[in-house]
Length: 365
Image (cartoon, rainbow, N blue to C red; front, side, top):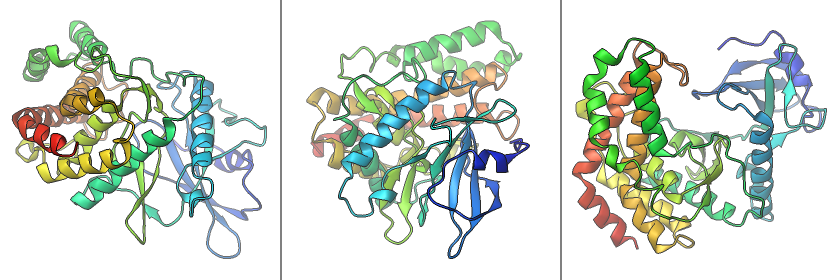
């Protein structure tokens, strides 16, 4: 991450609530793949105040104004849903507007920035450590969907068109294979063969005639904040991909990221497996919040959702690797290939245990 030349100037561009005090500095924050994120420190009387600054990746989000219009509508609706709730300021993200009145600020190098109120006394998880944590995270995403089910028209913008359109992701992989821009096709024949053997599953969700919902579309456990004291999941974060989608997309990505005890870039593939206790906790937590509004066909779609979304991300990692690592941030050579292999191993485990997963979902109604 290349720090901006004048981060203090970026901070001053935002209308922070009240006088935060003397600007002390900033540090990189989190481990997101897309944006550059900083936690900013001030020195008022009492505990240090903080805000979060993000430099928008306009290569990924090519229409940032549309992106921020979605986010502004979603955060306002969530705040309204929480009116009168205890601790409401910690249960939904809140944008800090720029002094210009806009949600975005352009620095002198042309980079676009946004600011968020920092939510204190919370933690996030890169990996689920227990069924209790899986339940809490899944419940938070289910509640998020439930709260946004009443978002009034108009329809949200598609911030990344075709984001979960798996047949298009498969087509992009075939295009990357044909172009072989980085000269890597020769060394990925096993992964390509695995992906091609499962092409038939790509349309299972997009062709199912399911109702469109407002979905998060990136339901990793590190996109939930947990309360330091209670361990309860209190706030869903990273709203860039909140847009129209299928409920099963969110559930599938929870299965992908919360039911395997190993990280998504695990290199020891023997450790990649679906944990049935974690799966049951994810399903129970999600349905405890979202089950009240899902139609029967949507509940039925949850059985294949984990396998499909895991397969889709494997396609994306492999495509990016073949294209020369142009989308996801990488931290070592062949990082995207390692990610792809881990996802393919999880697909195989989900296939092996599909009857048991179906029984768990059926038992939960």
